[in-house]
Image 1: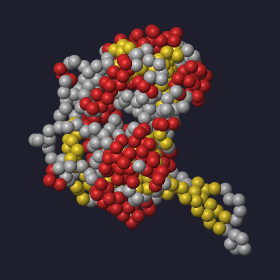
Image 2: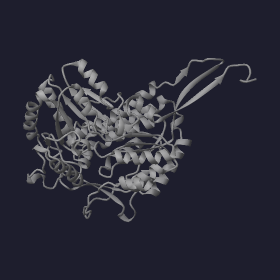
Image 3: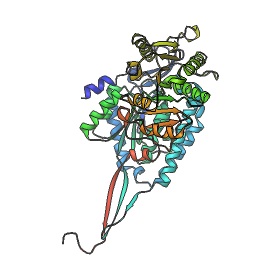
Image 4: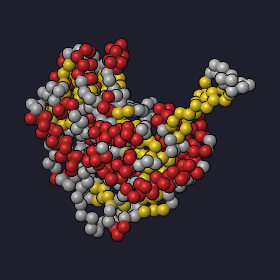
Length: 509
């Protein structure tokens, strides 16, 4: 079982020459910084825009997991954090949020180098990370336990209690935001957190741990372990001291984690893959729908779990809509992440770019026609990076692999549909159920379709809209449990019922 987990969590890492590169950044366990013995065992982050070294971090090993769990358990059980009133924990969370905002530009630039995302997008993600800490600080101050109505001579209540040590494993496509989305509510609930960032984008998590410490979070409650999935990730999930696992990433890895957690009987929060249907009815506002479809697939270069990758357009509008979509796709400005004019940057790595290109080749073999894109740009300025042209494909049935499997790149597959019943059937014909969107002027129609679509989030006349206070997660193979809002705090809490007897003598006597 663990061997399966080790196999599928093993992500590609670029082979690079690390000669003449800066020393690796250490990570901290408790109040002690740890570096790589003799300069070995490092993770090298590659800037996907130009192939340069974005940074080198010390690589955590399974023995570091053992030490981190021991320190976290000590801090959780004997430290003050879980015993503080929620409003007292809120003070520290507010300060973490304030410090993230104060370092906004530096953090955004570091994430840009790690991930290749446009700088503006990285700035927005840093803002969202700060919002998470502020939101859960406010939620701490208003969090209420439940007092249940008595049915006898007793008084009872249900209390939210922390689990203890939480393992949080995050993806590379939105580093600091995904990390804050897990760390903030887990800490707010009173837990200690072990955070494993993706090997592709390891640097932001180290900075977040530093900021938490500087903000006054007691040592040991937040440890970043920048290790590999096959050793550190597996060690975290299987460690007897870890009481709950929260994972965002691929569905195969999520299944493996759930298998291990199921054997251990510990809860999991899984936010997994998607193949979201993006629906355009023939009465939609043409311009708004077109803009929504474009941003829904080309934002983040399609490297988003909620990307609108399957475009369904009603047959009466299909040819006109797709023709204009193709023309506008040709004009998407590809460029370096720090260029303000850039609309789409590189993919995260050459290995991932090759995977995306492989799916486009597969679509051709399956009978699809590439209407635009479908290649690596030939501009010499992009030769050292991991760029791929925004791509539109048509002519495939919904059953094709390119329509069913998560590509995680700027590849849009267009499919016509007849009517409401047809698009509901096609939209739901996938193992995934993370998100869906539609454009229509008929709100009765929108309501009916939204209720029928099997998706955790449904957008109507908008797409990729998010709100920290609104629950997020998936149906079917897209995940288990919910993050954000009250649901996010409940995810990291377990319920304890307490009864106070008010009767004169024990029950049964």
